[in-house]
Image (cartoon, rainbow, N blue to C red; front, side):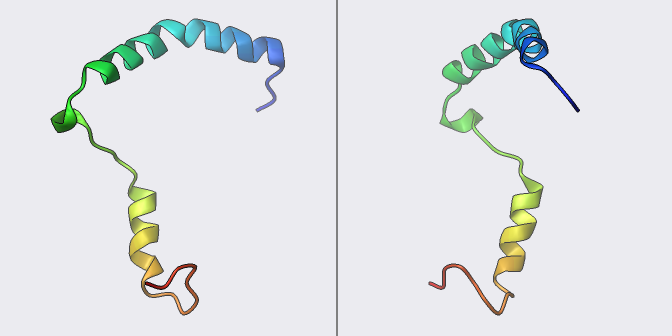
Length: 58
């Protein structure tokens, strides 16, 4: 997708209310509200243990 600087600024401007709402929601969250969802990272982490060459071996 080819997106120029002016078009990118328009997108950011349109998304500002939603971004602000997300920030406010995050600031009100407590430890019990926090979580993550990154299945690709979880799969990669589980496969890393089976590799012959590993970046970190601990």
